[in-house]
Image (cartoon, rainbow, N blue to C red):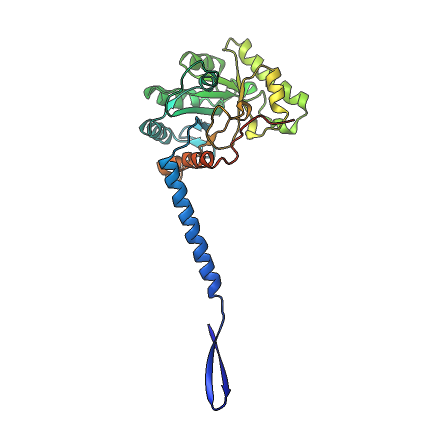
Length: 286
């Protein structure tokens, strides 16, 4: 604050010149309001947790690769333990779809553990961790990568299916479907499904969009190829009102802050569901 001295009639008077204090007061007030709103939202999520099926998105589980798609086996095991401690029960995508049709009941807190791409460590590392805890998973395979170095083989896929893993399509070549013509996108979805079924695996009903990218024409081509559902990379919780061709998933990258970060990602999806933000309710219109 600067001062202005005015002299007149034999005396001095001091006036305060307005500075930038009001800006700081405004910022502190805004920060306080944001903290207050955040605390209120956190309390609401805990007191009135939204109902819905949580779907988690993983890729690789190993100690070898260091990238944004790899969690370590120890980290993955801790996260599965946290799910069980928090009362979650693993289901498959088909379990969710059957429940939507009234053909089975869902557990109180259902979760689907999914893996994209079909890396070999899904079999060697992740599956034993899941089986030790009585949990199951869904693997979305890029079919033209089957048998390549670092990817699952057909024998491993058969073995995983025998051990309760649900298998789905991640297209034939893992190319963004939104950058293709409708005919090309349909061919990608069709080929991957046929490849898996011709190899003697169970009928494939679910697809994972490469890079999480989808467009309004996707449900139409997936229905023609007899897919019942598809998963995205959009966070949230899935209810029976969620578009089955835009199922919501919570991405789980490598953690920098341990199990708190894992729970925070799940909390974010719960908060978005509670607020009704971008929850993919209803069918997309072409």
